Length: 279
Image (cartoon, rainbow, N blue to C red; front, top):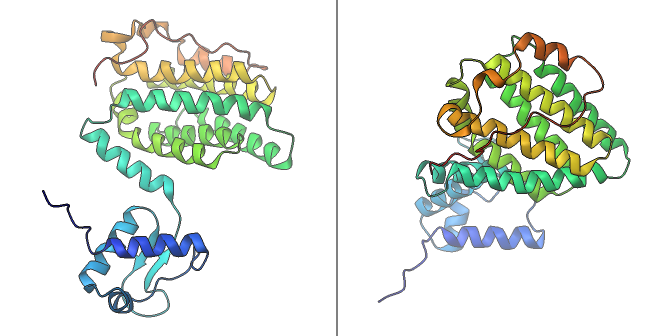
């Protein structure tokens, strides 16, 4: 049986990888014109355009059509966007279960919480914690739409993870959040008590933040685990989670509790059967 031949456009990908590694090309540089690349590699201009489309999907180039100084393909680096796109597509095919993505997030984020709590004092740490606290305050607004709440929620989690100082983990976490956003939206759409749920999430956010600020890494990790498992269990509130809707604190009482200081761990307990069984 014959070995499949690589597509013509892959020579452009190999060439760009080599140039990036050597430093001959850097983020922000423009690639040679389409005609020049076709001549240099003895391939068709259609193959060059295919290479550019693939690189665009990878988050490695941004192309602009037309003429002038802004036209052409510019090297960028947006790994989380490319990874999130790939994850979403494979989640849609059901080859990557959402359940497994959430478990992956648990592994990465709980370890990041331990390391974030232990991160040395620095102006950057102070600024990140300040920004995280501001995001939590924004999420307290009772009229905040659910989609905006979740945007700020994602920013909060990624900010705290960034304290661990691992760019790869931060990128993967960003991708995982983006890849599961439709799952989050479907969960929220099926809830008739979103205000109560959001208030419970806010209690959990404050507990997580306080634990990181006070350098209680294990408490931060435990609070994060309960927080993530608790929310994702809501997708099967009646059928699978074992958590009754009336176990949530009513919004008015919850909002009053949020304003008390200091907020102390533990966060609200997770349901008896935390993981959705459908794959």
